[in-house]
Length: 143
Image (cartoon, rainbow, N blue to C red; front, side):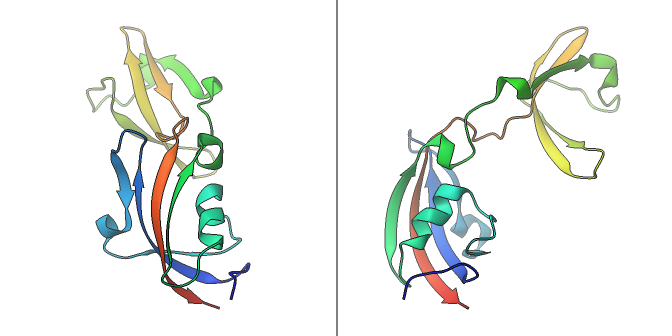
């Protein structure tokens, strides 16, 4: 029976980049990923790939960046005065900061560059602009 909106699924997966680097897997979390079909709880290409599976079936898919976390957006690179950074941390390129937005949502920001006067923050998702490969197995379906 095909999956439909509202079905709850459990999916075992391993996600890799084109160079073979594993960026995430359900085994790392100790349990399958659980989500409801049609609720936009996972990236669009992942849900689309799962839609074609039957319980117990496995599939390998390659998602272009547009079907995953999108392309990198240069408008999400921001320069801010260094004095606005936390004083209790030594900041350096490559660090990840968690910024709290006015609505309370938290957003990770990667420090791309640090100069004497400013800090360049990259607010793009770390996987933006990358193709993602997934090995999937639909382990459970419930209504």
